[in-house]
Image 1 (spheres, rainbow, N blue to C red):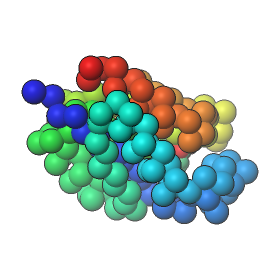
Image 2: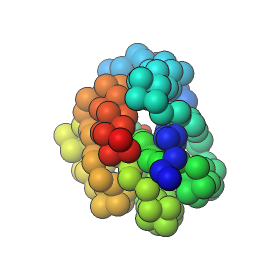
Image 3: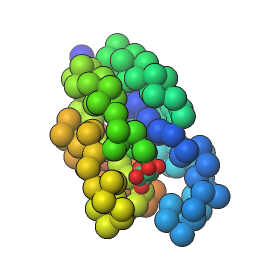
Length: 146
Ligand code: DQA
């Protein structure tokens, strides 16, 4: 049976949301995003495990662990989107539906942000919707798991 739990992964520097470049990332904190995701998911009968790390290996460990007890992954890989083959390989290995979320529209920013290694292994990519992007991700996965 598919697990009714989502893994929410936020990558490096997203612990600073709220005060980090608010003109780009807004003023919503990571704690607020995690709470909102948890509440939205609960409305669909889904639990959420939220992980944030500034360390690539910790993110990979969390993704690997999801294979045992999660039905889908929402991930904002932050800067690792643009650099990490290892993160992409971990997402491929667990074989769960993945939604990639970016608060900002990475395609309208510096050229080095236009490519994400994660996008090719994501079912859905949401960029530029701000914190609402995480909610859309929950809705998509809830539908997939229903
Ligand atoms: C980000 C975009 C990335 O390019 C950046 O490195 C981040 C955040 C976003 O949510 O818009 O840290 O993933």
